[in-house]
Length: 92
Image (cartoon, rainbow, N blue to C red; front, side, top):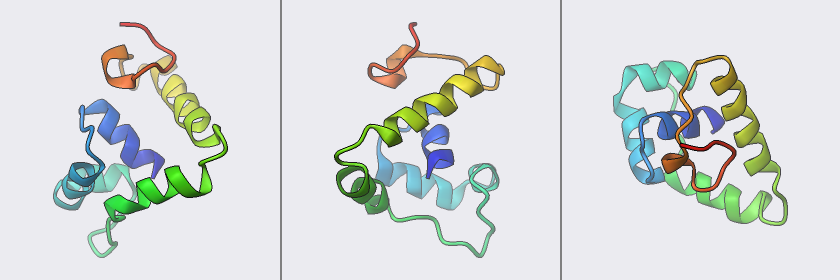
């Protein structure tokens, strides 16, 4: 799930539904998310259920996502862009 969100961040895909559709069609996204051609792409509702269910009372998921983004930025894998982050750790 984190890998799919990183794809969404890097390519400006804000809709979880669209992100799942893109991961279903784009072989590069599937490769990055470690999904084989036989693997099913998670349903868009999985993101919402996790956000409003398991991680509702905790900032753990946001913390983890921001930590992964910071490491990717530090390693120059991605470029920080505050316009896509909605208040995360980087500035434009």
